[in-house]
Structures are given as C-alpha cells and as structure tokens.
Length: 105
Image 1 (cartoon, one colour):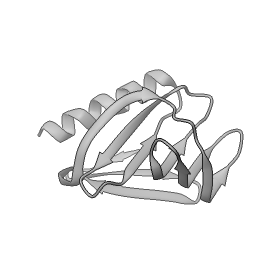
Image 2 (spheres, rainbow, N blue to C red):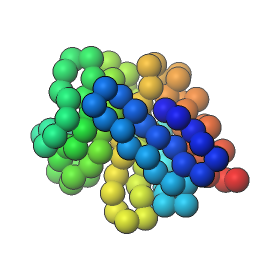
Image 3 (cartoon, one colour):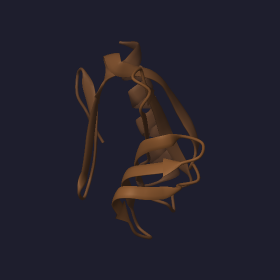
Image 4 (cartoon, rainbow, N blue to C red):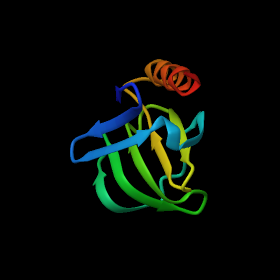
C-alpha cells in the first residue's frame, strides 16, 4: 500500500490499482468477503489478487492475504469496489486509519 498526497496504490505481484481520494465514495473495515470466481489474476493459498466476481459485490478488484481475516473495502463513485488487506489484521486496521485520515484532508 502506497499512500500519496492525492491517491493510494495497492500493489502485489502482478497487480496494481491506484485510486484518487476524490473518487472514493466510502471505505469500510470489514471481514473478508466470499471471494467468488477469479476472472483474471492470482489465486494461491498465500495471495488472491486481480479481478474477481461474487454475488455480493459483483465484479470487483481484490488484493488480499487470505489468512488475514480483516480487509478494507473501498467503494468508488463510479461503482467499482476494491478489497484489500495487509500483512496482519492489526496492520490492515492501521492502513484503514491512514486511508480514512487522508480522505478527511
């Protein structure tokens, strides 16, 4: 996770997604979703990332470590959803807090 003054980038092997803070509708700290079906990306025991689809979110961008049970869910103003986490639940909560602070500036 790379926070910049006007955007945040989520990066993993073979995956990168950058979003402007101005494009964010809402963010939530939540449990991992049912992943659903990978349309394009990586699906291993250690990392799930890329373009996915499930019943709850429809098509969405995913970048998570499945063993970490917390994630940040971002809904963008154009309707896209991004779900990501960090190395541990505590780190994910810290990333969520930084993201939230950056949105409020």
